Image 1 (tube, rainbow, N blue to C red):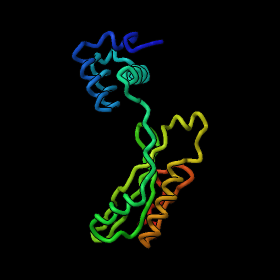
Image 2 (cartoon, rainbow, N blue to C red; image 1 turned 30 degrees about the horizontal axis):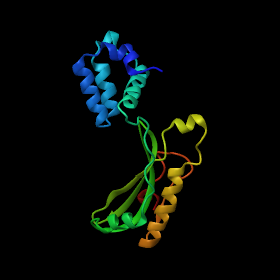
Image 3 (cartoon, rainbow, N blue to C red; image 1 turned 180 degrees about the vertical axis):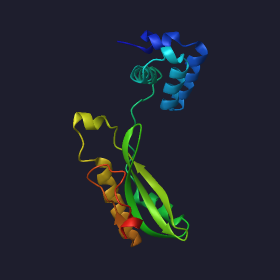
Amino acid sequence: MNTVMDSPIWAVLSAAERSAVDGLIQQDHRLAAVARVREAFPAESRPGLHKTLDMVAERYRELGRRFERYPTPPLSPVTLMEKVKTLPGRTVAIEALWDGDTDGWCVDLVALTDHPAAEHRLAIIRHGSDLRLFNGTVPPWPEAQEAQTVGRALAEQLGVPFHFASPDRPDYDAPRWRTAL
């Protein structure tokens, strides 16, 4: 079994750099750890991104940390309603929209308010990384299904519309509730 100690990248890092990378990993700053490793090398001998990611992922495992993201826990309608009650202004709609980052796609559940007209994130729903695209486990997108179920129930309880323009597939450019009026 390979370990990070077998990595030629890790072997070249100084003790101070290794400690700094481990500190970033302990804080779950994956991209910062990758950047720190790569920046420790001169530009002409900098390791490739994929090799560096593999090395950082192995270091995560050695430190007893999980490199892949955990799915978010199921949403609690009671907790979400408590959040909505603390928002300034009147809630005029509940909206689900796709978002993404280096881990993959997720769905944000937001409350839209008037006076002031604003958007307030209530929850981020993530059920796995984009590796699911390669192993054929999506669609359906479970985060979209959860957002629809919980978002619709919350909207009904508040007596406001629920909007999710693209529940079947991730889409940054799907029309928003305020623009669809």
